[in-house]
Structure formats: structure tokens, C-alpha cells
Image 1 (cartoon, helix red, strand yellow):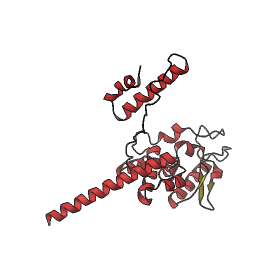
Image 2 (tube, one colour):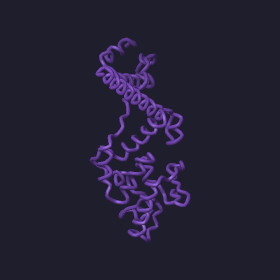
Image 3 (tube, helix red, strand yellow):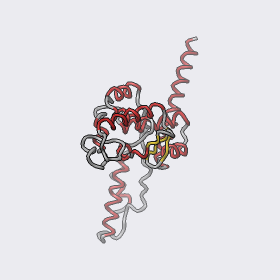
Image 4 (cartoon, helix red, strand yellow):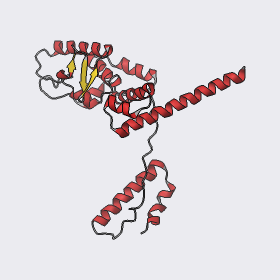
Amino acid sequence: MTRDDVLTHPKALHGRHRRDQLIALRSLFTWAKRNGLIFRNPTSRIKVGQNEYSVLQPLVPDQVNRAVAAATTPATRLILALAAVHAARVAQIGTLMLDDVDIGNRRLTIAGRVRPLDELTLKLLLDWLDHRHTRWPNTANLHLLINNQTANRTTRVSNHCISAAMRGQTATPERLRVDRQLEEAIVQGPDPLHLAEVFGLHEKTAMRYADSARRLLETSAESLNAVKSSVDDQR
């Protein structure tokens, strides 16, 4: 089997499907050569190419409003703020400790990164801490978020528990996190270095957010120019 033979089937495929097929074939032939089933790997000179991601899309206000309406407890309101304001992942929210909250200096440490506490998050934190103390005054669990199952232990609440209140919503904690980072890229400019510094993103992830923001801004500018041209034509 030659290189051309390998490329015959993927020729009819495009985008992600072609890339997935080539990755699978390369993996198969690499395994076959390593185990002595073939003498030459016909995929060794085939380039898979970069994975083309779709443009990240921002949430619309109605989607966010429905998520806010669904957050009816102190815990879920705090979870909403941590995701939507501070772009915290569900797992990061679950592992937050009481020591990560510095009310006096208005600071919050998420995944080792210190962030300033805004007014909204501060209020929701105080509401939750007051509820936490009232509901479980004698708990020894030092995690910020606890529930009936973890209050008598020292373990963290599950990811499922954190996401449960937003289940069925478009604006889930994960989508809110993505939306916050995309908003930063749009408002502050599509600079991957800035995004990596603010949110601790991997360089490739930061570049994806920056690219999506750039393309959204270009589309917005094109739409605005089209509207202006239409108005000028009507004059």
C-alpha cells in the first residue's frame, strides 16, 4: 500500500471528517509498523493539518437572564457569579477553600490566581457564607461550597451538584465561563497574551478566543458598514 492509496478514501471528505480519518489511518499504520506487520508506514509523510475550530459565539441576554432566574439559592447564585464573572471552571469552583476567600482585602484565589472581588461576587459570597454558617454551624469541612452530603465530611461537592441548578439552561456554568473569556477578548481587544495572563489560559486556547473575537468584531463592523451604506442610499 502506497501513500496515494491511503489518500484515496479521504479525498471525498472535508474539514474535521477528513482530519479524523487521516489521524485514524496514521495511528493504525504506526501501530502495524511498530508490531512488525508492515515494513514501511505509507502515512509517515502525510500532514494532517491544523484542526479548524468554529467561531465561539457569545450568549444572548435572554439566555443569561433565564440562568439568573434559575439560580434561586445562595449557593447557585454564587456559582453563577464565579463562572460568569471570574470564568471559573466547575471543577475549580468545587475545589475552592475558605482560605481562598479574603474578604478583608477583597481578593479571591481561583486555581492559584488571585483575582479582585467585584461588588456582585462579594455580596453573593457574604450571602453564601452567612447561609453556610447558619445551616451547618459545626461543620469541619473547609471547602467553600458544601451541601448536606459533604457537611459531615471533608470532601468537596461533586461537579454534578455544582451544575445541577443550571441543567437544561443554555447558559450553563461552562457556557458562562466561555462567554466571560470571549467578552474579555472582545472588549479589551483580541490579544491572546492578555487572555492568558488574566485567565491562565494555555496559549492555543487563548489564541482561539482571540481569533473568535477578531472574527466577531470584523463581522460586526461589516454589518455596521452595510447598514450605513443602506441609510446613505436612501437619502
